[in-house]
Amino acid sequence: MEIKLEDLKILYSSEQLQTRIAEVSKELNNFYNGEEVIAICVLKGAVVFATDLVRHLDMPLKIEFIRLSSYGSSTTTSGKVNAVDIKLPDLNGKNVLIIEDIVDTGLTAKFLVDFIHMNFHVKTLKFCSLLDKKITRKVDIEPDYYCFDVDDKFVVGYGLDYDGYYRNLPYIGYKE
Ligand code: IMP
Ligand code: MG
Picture 1 (spheres, protein in one colour):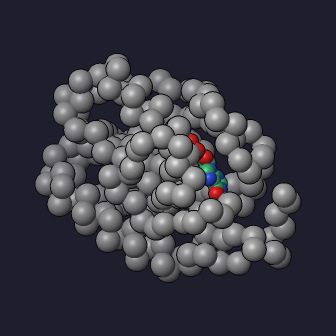
Picture 2: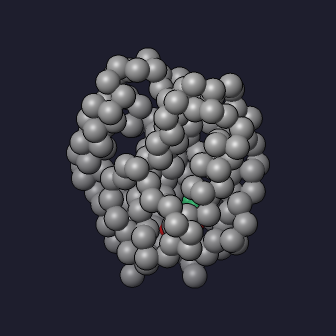
């Protein structure tokens, strides 16, 4: 599949994204109730979402970045998660919030949740994803918080890429 900018249809507009991110942020602010949070942004896809989301969060917060990859340059997952860079500070006793762009097969989410539980005794671990593609799930995992559902479409924009491109679009688009 090749994706050209002129073929893209808007699935979620910039306004829809911002409105929903503000709503989800309120849920997070209620849950954490002012307690410190370590947010972990999964590069590269979650970077746009994470930077918008954290600006709504009202507790003491630190951001860490890790880099995982599972896709290569195709539009279907390779089925194997690569920990390209997973250096993290001591998370023992912390409220940890993972910020992801999309949960698709769930392999990345499961890898990361297992990795954190294997290495740390965290106080809380929550998973917040911009998008949830439930229909393609292969492992039993659900994001604790998410903004929007996606059916079996390959989407781009707002951090999500096709072969590295389109992360800079302010909306979520798809090719029909
Ligand atoms: P999973 O491990 O299959 O759940 O895939 C997670 C990763 O695949 C996400 O972090 C994305 O980077 C990528 N991904 C899954 N679906 C899409 C899509 O529709 N567009 C762009 N990237 C996607
Ligand atoms: Mg990703």
